[in-house]
Image (cartoon, rainbow, N blue to C red; front, side):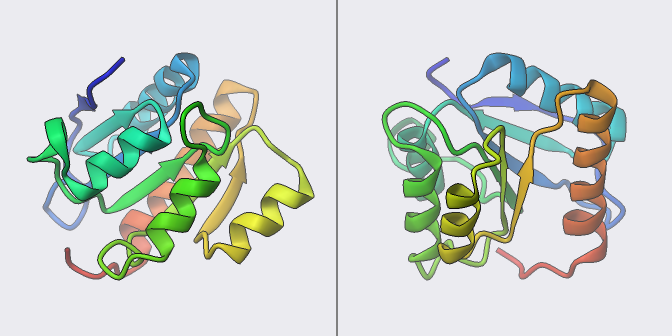
Length: 156
């Protein structure tokens, strides 16, 4: 997949569409996340990019992403080709225009080194992807409830 993939669902409780950027190179995990978001019916737009380079192009609105929307939240995998999630996180959190976007690491890694490094890079939270579908759906629901309903986010 070379372009951001977009999935639309109903709007959130604030009456506007919520925009999520999912950065993940595993199509099975992308489909799982899409299904979890559909079941929870909060998200209005999900944009998917497959690696860190595409994520930064999307966020900086470069090239084919010139009209990309500013995400309300970023779901970021750590282990990807070209540029991994750690590098992407470092760039996001060091940029004054991007650092206020909440970044949730959603990864299979349970390594303490990855957890410490992510928090040292100012990740907003770190979640190890549950293997069971129902637990994964519940994890996504909790992320949505907290970050998209409970927390007051700055306007773009």
